[in-house]
Length: 181
Image (cartoon, rainbow, N blue to C red; front, top):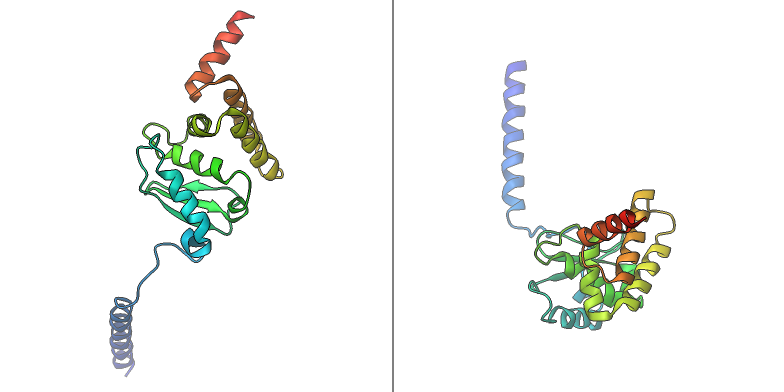
């Protein structure tokens, strides 16, 4: 009797799994969770604005999708070319900086180099606006940055003011400056 109950249980479990798989094949699973909503569905005017920014010839990769991130406090980019804009940044005076900076990360050879990504913003907005926006983001972080990240922000600000284009330029500049002393 026990063996028969066990076989019935196995049969029913397999039937449920097959039914569930069949049912799931007909529903559309979203690309991202509800935490991310396409910018065009949140604010069409802002979406049109950031799409115009992507048409700047300085960017090689302008096939970008924009999402609004309702949880993360900073904007990010993924390897597929999607930009996730923090909801708080969406209505800030630094939205253009954020877009230029994140687009900078999508260019060849930039990846995690914040100074190179900032340089794309400097090239379009100028050093003063870029400096002000990096400061705005830094102040907005409200202590969520570790000491290493704070040093990185200081390096970014220094690089912007001194026209440095990459982390290597910054390291070369600092090494030469230290050798002079």
